[in-house]
Image (cartoon, rainbow, N blue to C red; front, side, top):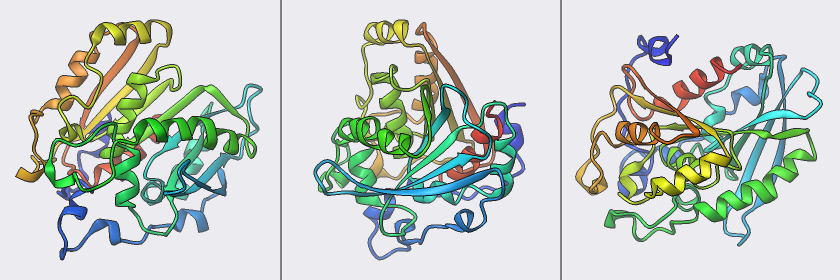
Length: 298
């Protein structure tokens, strides 16, 4: 069943991308909301949580990581692993019922929610640096530190995963990545530049407005990468997502995500699925997409 049909009856809450909070002083800001950690107190019986705290290579960002391990025994090769960006917010999209159902799947994954120390739902400056591959087109965000995606990706693979692997056995051949908004942009960047690292990616409402050249443009180069490292990409958007205000705009067209799906779908070696979840705005896409992805896990 298409993901969109599962969520067509959900009410729409239209919200600007989370970075708008940084650009609108004096208004209610999503980044000031405390994280919802209820699932840590009531995880159900299917998963158990443990935690890690790690620093970035330069010591400027401090990560809080939650590891959710299935109750079922680990396969001989280790568990599949699904990394969840914006981990503080992603925890709010999890609940005991969802985790108990996921644990009953034939191959339940370890969930690694990669968040930030401090207890806020969103860490604006942290994600602005970690999830962006380049400087933005919009002058609005030029004062922030950005463009650290490759540094963050190396940290995730070289520092975080070995630390998680000391707690729970992982199968690196079944490594997946989920992200929303700027996190969705990072998923695309990671999958298109390092298909050897991720078997599949879930890019939700990706912030393609960041720059018209933020992603690799050479399709021949992509063909070469995916020829030796096939991957699967799921692109999700909300049917009620609106165009961004002028200070977010760039040369990127409003249907950029669909166009990207069409383009990548022509490249051998990458399996692409594009889907719209009816009735959902940008903000609600975070928990709804996470539920959709985990509900269809096999």
